[in-house]
Image 1: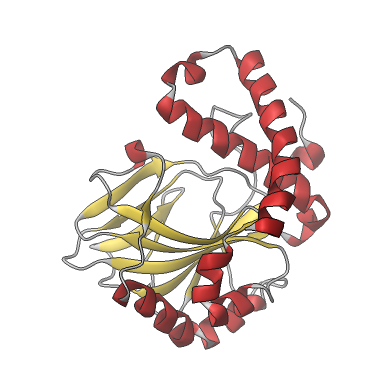
Image 2: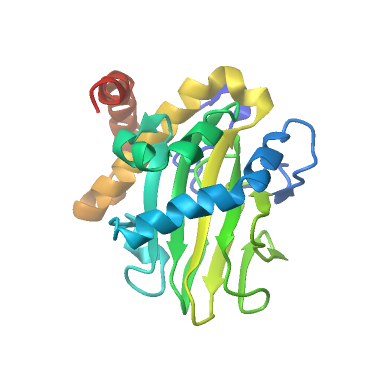
Length: 250
């Protein structure tokens, strides 16, 4: 299926990513000035995370359980998810929410936990039209014990610093320390793709919905590609209707 401006989506390209996007982006690169906003306010963001943890706010395990080596070891608290707003969570993190809303093209944001002694297996993300950003909040160690690998290039997380990468490249993360790791994860549409933000979000929401559904109904993953593409078209159409309604009434 031909995609607009040759944007890569994992749902339609099952053989991996062979595009030209770099594995990592520099925070100093033009268009990423918003990284300073996050880094200058990381303590405020971490304070709201710690308050959530203190009040035992329930973190949800990532829906694809096969991606982790230890069950329930990768958990999140979603604030925004491909254009969907989780207002109750945002209300508990008002400062973080205000900061995120100042980032042009921000479509997803969540607090992410990677438990001690666990690994996220190598996988491709959803698209090369975004820059995925990790803001280090609680980082229990550095390489080789705790770190991140994108397309054979390793980087450690750093407390209060942003780590920017292309989610389309195969990547993996590990925390082999004795303490949990917390980050704020943000997805931002790359400047050249901002006019297609709604198309990108609806395409990915539909693919994530079908991936989640396939976890419960495994036969979906074995359907012919033309049938999967048909289901995706249906899910994308329904999402365009449902998301604005959700954001209004949620």
